[in-house]
Length: 222
Length: 151
Image (cartoon, rainbow over all chains, first blue to last red; front, side, top):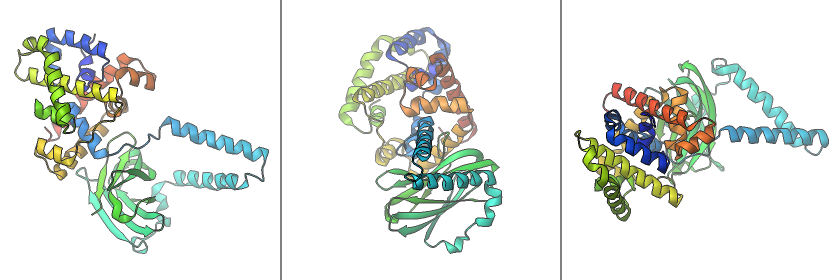
């Protein structure tokens, strides 16, 4: 039994046996009693983050990476076996992979050249600045597959891999795009293209969520 | 106490009544000993009540109830904007923790995992998870203490 178990005890994440053990310790330990008081509001604080994060997304953690790698190796194997049959899949891989790599290596500073001027993107614009200063602007264009999205995000604290999440009025969350925010303050806005599987009228808000948790900015759609 | 239980159960009156009853039942043995410092008994009862709610939810196999704006506003007297704002402050505070500390909270409480489940998932010892959770909470508390206006 260690004094630092008080953290897990306050969050209610100890198993029954450990929890009972800690309670026995707590009765006679002034230090832990003080800590318990000090930390007792923390679960509420964390619940607040959970609430604003809305519905959980499937965690794109190690499992997704494994699946992706597995898909790629399956595709590779097929390609060598029956080259012509899987021509389309292979072509997709060949086209997609170099593009992805080039995009990563180029970085946002040099990608200004391919920037679509805002005026060329038609649709309704929503924008917001978070209390921590992050800025986001999104243009929404109705399409037959949902809503086409163009976003500009700046003043973020990189580096972080982020998900741009769309939350519908029915509280469904979908990823519009993922991106890598380079280190430092993002002075030049990152321009990101994405899509939502909802009509514009069904979209409640956008969030930019670093994969490490939390949300950098929320952009409400009225 | 009942108001707290109501909030924890997402405004389920019947469930909240059960939680209060169960909390008092579990607490009666130790209550006398934890009444020495002002506020301690209350903090402890809150912890016990939360534990009971979490246990019930686990056995039901349900995810945490998303507290509706109405329940939240009534309970805390907050409006939607204030709620968003404080949540953003907390997100920002979380982002200031070390990756290990942030992950410890992310993979336990925020993913509804126990210490042992998280330890298995992360491939580290339960002791390490517990100590990271502890230092993460302390750090979060400190960061939030520095930024004004939160609790």
